[in-house]
Amino acid sequence: MASTENTLEVEFSEASNNWNLEKLYIDLAAAKGKGLTPVEKKFLRGLLCGYSPSEIADQVYKSRSSSAVRVYLSNGLYKYIQELVIRQSGNLIKIKNWSRVTNLLEKAGYKKGFLNQIEENDRELYRNKKESEINQNSSKHYDGQQAIIDVENFHGRADEIAIVERWTIGENCRLVALLGMGGIGKTALAASTVEKIQDEFECVIWRSLRAAPSLAELLLDLIQCLSCGQETELSANVDLLASQLMKYLRSPTARCLIVLDGVEAILRSCDRAGYYAPGYECYGELFARIGEENHRGCLILTSREKPKEIASLEGEKLPVRTLALTGLKTSAGQEILSAKGLLGSPEERKALIKCYAGNPLALKMVATTIHDVFNGHIAEFLEQGTLAFGDIRDLLDQQFNRLSHIEKKLLYWLAIHHRLVPLRGLVEQVVPGICQREHLEAIESLRRRSLLDKNSTSLTLPPVLRTYITEKLSEQISSEMTSKDLAMLVSMSIANAQFKNSGISLTPSAKGTPKALSQERPKTTENYYQISNDC
Picture 1: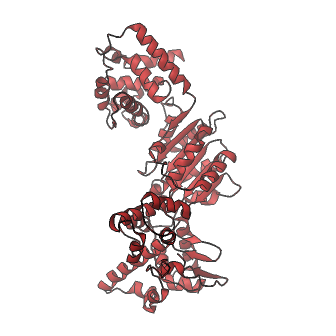
Picture 2: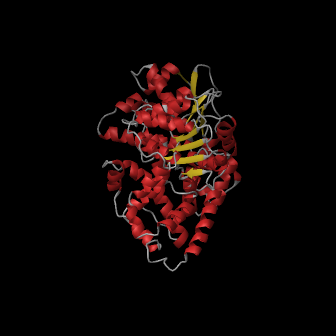
Picture 3: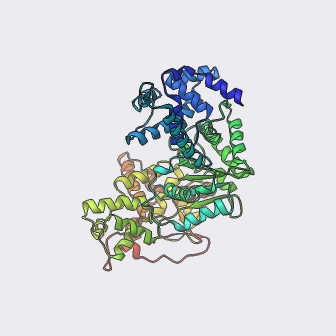
């Protein structure tokens, strides 16, 4: 082992001619929370000598492929250097290019000539103090982005946090998926839960998939973090990398928690929910391995859609669980409205919360509009009768644009139809000529996208979603009438004037509650779908 470290020290050793390496090692270790690894020191010396990541890879690995070195730098040294500079100067900086490293460290005083006046005894005392601080924090490893997520203003979800805590800590679940439509609070729930349970794990890693990294890139990153940089010669084969990750998850001494946020970014659009985009199918194999193989680690996913492997593996008594998030309770929604300084009676506040189905992001968006445009008066906003607009419409557009053609038609039908219809009639009226199997698949897909609420007797669209869909349908009809193509008009039976008879209204009633919120549900009949008109 000693000979290996000595060999590593030889590479890029000329850096010591111009830089105070020992002090830099110690200060970066303090920023990291434990000592730098030999590989980290080696890459740092390479940068200080002016070598690019490609040149470092060429010298160290005899390869011009710099992907491993770049992942290593961006997830390790760059972060430590950023933290070091912030501590010393108080300035927030972001290292996006290797060439910035030497300039920052020179300004921080690590180039020789700045510290020659310090006596060696003072240096030794300083070194011992720093090493003592490092040793106190060396047993835990936290690497992630949840720290930048604001959980100070996180409202409600105490029950959901308790459920995830029980699954991950009490029942040792291997995979937990937090699902829900956009803005429902999946990421905030994951961050709040991690903050509470992180001390139960020796290693916590948080990664966002919103940029849709390849599985190979993600696995290289995770393995580097789990090995604390010790794994330097990694295969490019995804199956081998996945097996290496599973080895770390099976560690008997160090339990690891991994959070992957925004899994919908790697899923396919304009198709049934849960299928992977081209080139990302291997993610499904990884999720299946994590759910099926025996290990002590835990993976938490957040997604607007349920990946198909998770649908087949989940169960109340199985090590794979899913938690579908619904809207906030009224009390938590009231906290959001109060924080925005809105004015209104308890009934008006409840009506507003119900219109947006307790979606916290939608409530924050509409509360901002009410504050800025209506001087904070909820009743004045409700009188306008418009729910889907601005940022809220953009949020709904994101999910609607991912739907298949059949799913869109089904939502159109649900938005305008308000009476009991037998299953056969439902299929015929929504998509004439489409078989029952495809229709049921569309319902299942919409459920997996968290766009349909279902109980034992009804399928329900949240009011804001129903309003949005009817507006989209009107736009579609207008477009098709302009092009003299009335196919959708005929297939949807719009000529029956169902809008006029549906009774949807957001005009406040005498009691201050929108009329659509005060209607009673129709009675149910067995073997029928009841499309609830209750907001």
